[in-house]
Image 1 (tube, rainbow over the protein chains, first blue to last red):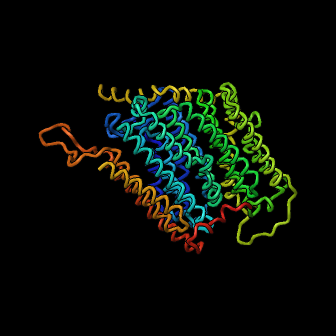
Image 2: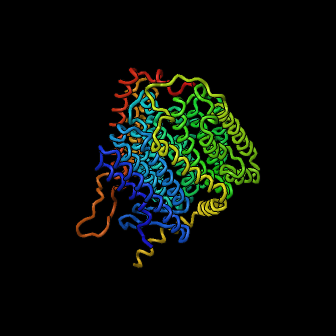
Image 3: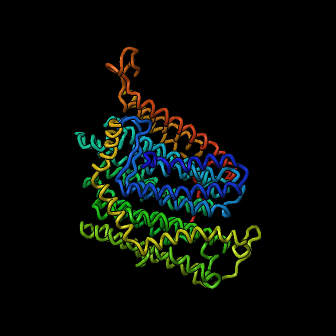
Length: 509
Length: 117
């Protein structure tokens, strides 16, 4: 087995990005390089996942510095599966961007930045060092700022100011927490810290630090009182960019939250209560926010917030079943939310606007497309065999067996309000009678598209819908993966042994 | 010395947050810069202070001996400073662009993307 396999998901996107920089003004060549890079990323993701699945958690010490001193890269099942899913999304976004993002934007380095963003994502999933997690987060947010502002339309700039400010604050809070952790433990290696923290006598300080982490990651993932940047900015960039943000960026925050609150600060009674209350309120306010919006992209933005509550709530319940449910929900959510925002791009091209009053009659005009779009919408609601249903089984049963009826009620509320919202979306876009619209002369509509343009819009959606269908009908595979992930998360000695066990092997060599 | 630095960190945090709560875009950026410096000082302080002991290995020795300053926080601060430089230069370009496009410096009037409908 190749011992550097863990680094390949990072390297593939780094190399792709560097290659893209050499073809700065040539969009056509950039398309092929980007799609090829993402496809190789998927292959590497599969190989890494298979290797982790067969051989357990893997780690590598960068520069051969022994474990607590150098930077460690660790890939457990959670990291490996998220890397794989991120690369599937990367392929969809790469294909979609070929025609949805205008070539002037691509000439400003859109694709290179896109791949730097994926490099940051892979790094954040794989790193085992707290400070390098911060650095990967910065790589992600710098790239996302550029992707958000590239093009420089009025709305984009205004959304970017809000996005920038709150993400900066979140990074500063995260860095504060890292500084404090270093102060009390004297280490930055996450596995090492997990062994030092239980021995600290000042429990109040540890509690405070853990909540500072929660606030920092809470801004990133958009939990209740900290989510206002999300609906203000996510509908402004081109569809491909907002799909990427919607699918992956908030989930990185949730991933960091799961990692920190299982490994470094296993949740105590108080923190569980705080996190559950916040998850419940996130579901409530996200759902209520979505119901009043009249722009389909804003509805989807609020639904992101609403469904973050499922993952954070699953973490708050803090049993193996609940964590498995949360992780499964995360897989489902990444795929489906990306699909929804890509669909938003198609709506924009069909109707010339994403506001409900300008839409209608999709089912009469494009019946096959409507059938395709119905699958992710119903999956989001959680209509039984589709993917949203399976994680909810675990989450509901975990909430019920723990006797946390507040959480159970909020989960049911979320499912019902999602149903109402999707019914509203369906009614306004698909089944409402087509209305007379003023044709905009400055825009090319979907029915004027060439075949290749249609393919670049629809093929990524088909790709992601296929993943959703695979999830739906072979849910036991995801259940198995999620079960193993939750075992690994709850029993941190596996992680610790993987980080420090490799060190022994190296000495033998 | 510790107490002095701790108070200083607190003042920087307070000043940064105060500036960020003002309505001007420029003050928002200055607030972020000051807050960033506060964090750097905090990391420096949390690493533990020791006076006049550079972490250098003497020519004869193989490891650090006696009292020495922890080199890790300095490396962390250096990284954090470089990152915040990059972000701040982006921020300045962004507010310049925002002023040109939106023709306002007042954050309270920037609510177009939050409106319902």
